[in-house]
Image (tube, rainbow, N blue to C red; front, top):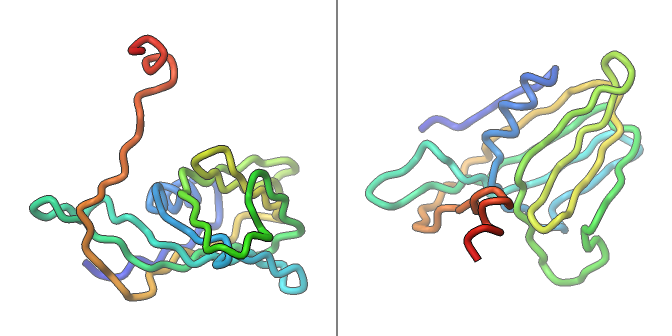
Length: 151
């Protein structure tokens, strides 16, 4: 499969990037808010949902970049940990607050989140090249109400 390169300039575009990054793994030390550049960047291990081949799946190294970022707020993200803690990205949400500006939120498993205050949506997702095979396919539990009934 050719390397993925996507640009997002609106909420619909961002939803496509979010779908491609569902279940991506990112190490905390491989994410950075660069206030002087008004940029947020991350290197991720993207799960390629389209790559199933005899029980093997592809993971690909990818870069995610957001431009025109005014601030970043972190919730339940261990920024100061010296260990190489990895997080599982579930989705990227966008909330418009003033026409084109708003908040872009990276939502992680376990309740962690990064909320970016953005002047507008300007993002890029790009595969970097390395691809490796895995048998581990991310699983998603049924919705919470069904889980409670199963007990």
